[in-house]
Image (cartoon, rainbow, N blue to C red; front, side, top):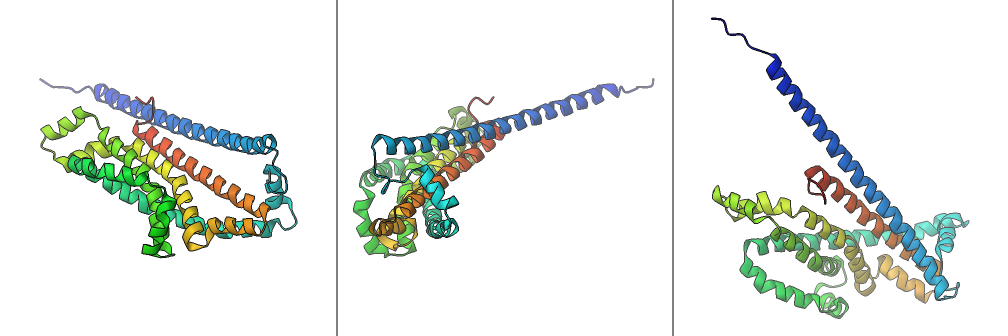
Length: 293
């Protein structure tokens, strides 16, 4: 007896698998495009709302045009005036310093928050002991702690890291810790049944499940880091946008002052929405985006 094979069966199965893969790739690409589109629309709406509130507040409160500068005034000072190039350079120099300080505070605060959240996940006793202390410290105004921080760390980059890190730390710590605790209990049980320990559960279940919360912590930390940098510059280092704004007030340079404020606000909005766009793309590709199945 001769046994003949039927190549059509396997070929049909392989074709179906390939078709299914193409469908999955197309759906993933569509999800990414939808996520990017939503992020861009959100950014555009945010810019329109901020500019509208700025313009409307000046009109409603009838602030003197000598002190208050509207969107058209700042645009003219930065773009259309004969000295616009020099004006932009005068804003860009302190802005670059502030962004460097903000990056230091952002990294310092986020790293400590992530390490702390992992420790809290692995040891609930440590979380119960330290989280109330962290919340108590968070309730103390940072400007009240600033003189002590300056006396301990001086007026250099260490103070920038500490002040910026404190601003970033507490919101990021709470958000990340809640994200690590949001892992589904059945998934934790599956890892435990197969002999996985706390580190395995953390690596395979808790960390992937905490991605949305981790990105939320990063989004919150971006403007927080810039705020911490401005505060450190104003109180300690004497450079960057924080010090430039203080000097502009005393020197009655209101166009420069408002341009600095606009530049910092614009950078904060851009960075926030860039993080949101990256978050949307990653969560859409991993199936963790809201409404993903």
